[in-house]
Image 1 (tube, rainbow, N blue to C red):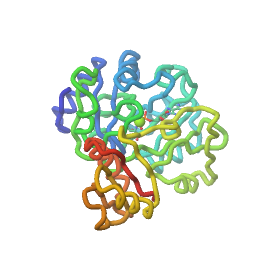
Image 2: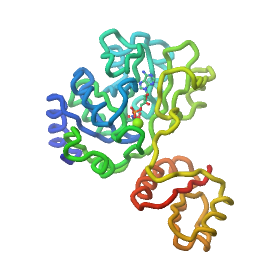
Image 3: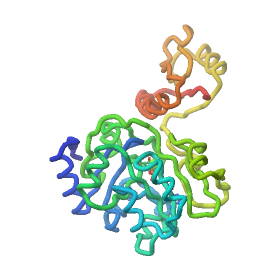
Length: 304
Ligand code: TXA
Ligand code: MG
């Protein structure tokens, strides 16, 4: 897998690869995406294969601008236009009814499609130069932690993985996935929380958001039993319980806490995270990946 610079020649190489149906991972403001030509079913199939993702789990389509929504959505409304106006480009994905021309492979057989206009300058340059839409789920294997650096993507996919290249745009600013809103239904629903808060969306729509019931589709990673998971067992607990645990077990634990390390943590690995949610989100996946590589017995995360 090739590492490309985020300059004109790197973007040009990425566009050539994408036009020939290859997959290229690229940075967005949320996490790195694993991109393929959204109009090419072979490329879309290759994304599912590289990720090991079940075919009924739909992909988000990345658009260069809000105007291109016409080609994908069949029910553009005042709601979608208002949200696009305020939040695009940016970390918001909208699920809308799809145009008949949209591939069933992308939507996992559903009659809706997830759309997003990313704000990251490299993602923007890539989409403009490509001149079309890119299907791009997060560039990680199914169920694993999303990548927030090119290094994470390189660790995730080997040479034989079917991923041709990654454009190295450094660390992602947001660090967690986009907020997903379902606008294909009468009452808009929050499918996945993210950096754009439900309250911000509600104030634009002037309407409360609902949350889906677990028994119904559509399927969203943030709602599966296990998702965004490290391979080391992870437990969320209150700080008192963490302090008690590290005092009883002097090594083999990784801790992600909102408090500084107590002296008794001795040989356990303790990461003191910022209390501020934006700064916390930016670092979380990177810290989880680093800890996962350290082979601890358990990772303990302080309940925010
Ligand atoms: O921040 C992000 O959204 C990142 C970057 C790369 O843009 N992408 C991302 O994609 O997180 P992915 O595929 O890992 O997660 C997208 C989620 C999936 O869990 C999928 O189920 C949901 O969006 N989704 C996509 N299309 C949908 C649809 N038509 N209906 C319901 N959920 C949908
Ligand atoms: Mg994902």
